[in-house]
Structures are given as structure tokens and as C-alpha cells.
Length: 290
Image (cartoon, rainbow, N blue to C red; front, side, top):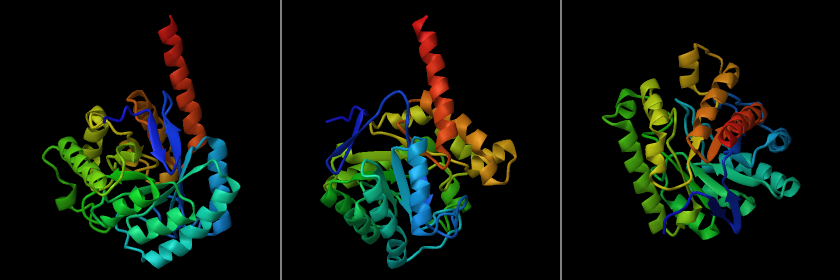
């Protein structure tokens, strides 16, 4: 039965979607993530950051123990678990209403995170790295985010992995196949989210095509998450090398995605984006009243 894109179910709870996108706040418990690596590497720093993001308007906190920036090398499961498990447990205790996502490609890490209290698994490989993630999500009745990527973080920006004949159609087929595979593994349709993977195995033109044709991905009729925060394509358009200086560019893209009806936007900087989108949507509502 088609999902009407209004509700995501995970672990007995529901996320409601409306005119305003929901915001997923990023917590990288890593020393080497592209934008904030090393800043929230201790459990307390990570939890404090998560609490701030929630106060700023985040509904979901996405916690990862392995960088997936271009060129990043894999991190073994035990090390990822040691990084993220205490953060999830502490955040679950101090912010019980928060939805927690584990950003991992590894089924062992996903299972440990769900046992610790996570609600959602965010698999940037779209089941291409470890297909058991789908069975783990199904066992816990967790939400499952399936993102498009080719290759590994260490190889994804190669010419071979970043060249397409028709990128939107190829990403659409990939995501449709990934969702069907997850459903065959026992994941419920209403527990699934799709993500086009902006910046993952894509050059500037590929990112542009996906953003301008985002409506074609919504035809799959799953809630759509898009991560654009501080990404390289924004720096390329604005000629800004420092990711921390790409906040205004990120807000611009987020407003476009809100207009396009995207359900969830993944961000490092929640407060300025939420304020900008609140006013953008308010102006639209006032116009419609006239």
C-alpha cells in the first residue's frame, strides 16, 4: 500500500510530516569528518551538542562513529560501537522524546545502536555494503534510511563512480531496488526513507541535476531526506573553501528543498535554517491568503 509521505513509523513511534521539513542534526563522534571532525569526540561533548541541536529545532539526531567523507577509510565495528554507544545511551536518558539515528553501513554497529536506544538506521550505502542491516532494522521495527552511493567513501569520487548517463533515473532505480530489497528482508514500507546522496559519488553537475529534478525521486512515494549541509558543491558555486563558511549557501538550498516538499533535511546548523524556512513559508502562506 502506498505511503502518503505524511508519517514515518519507527519502534512504536511516529514522525509526522507537514509543510515545514523536519531537521536532522548531525553529530560526528569522529576525529576526521569533513566539517566537524574532532569537535564532539567525547561522549559529553557529543551529548551537549545534541541537546543544543534539539533546542534549536532538530527532531532527529544522527550519530555516526565513522566518517564517510570523500577519501575516508573504514572504521572497524568495535571502534564505531565504542564511540557511539555511550552517546546514544546518555542522549536517550536525557532526551527521551528525541528520535535518534545511527549513521552506519555496518549491521553490527546498527544492532548495538538500536539496543542502546536508537530509533533509525541511516545506511549511506543503500544496503550495498552490508545487506544484513535491513534484517537488523526489521528485527527492531526501526526506521531505515537508504541513501544512494557508488563505491566506498575512499573511491566514490573517482571518475568511474561519479559519471552517469542519466543520474536522476539511475539514482531513482537504485533507491527503488534498495527499498524493495529492504521490504523483502522484513522492513515495513512505512519505516523507510530515501536519500539521493548529494555529494556521494557525484560531481557538481550531478548534484545540480538531482536537486533540480528532486520531484522525480518523490515519485517513489517514500519520505525524502536530503543532506546538503556545508557540502562541497555549495563551496564550488560560491567559491568558499571552508565548510564552516557555507551556512548561508546551505540555507539557500534548504529553502529550495522546502519548496519542493522534501520531508527531512540533514544539517549541522539548525537554528538559522529553521528561522529562515519559517519566514519563507510564512510569506508563502500570507500570499496564499490574498
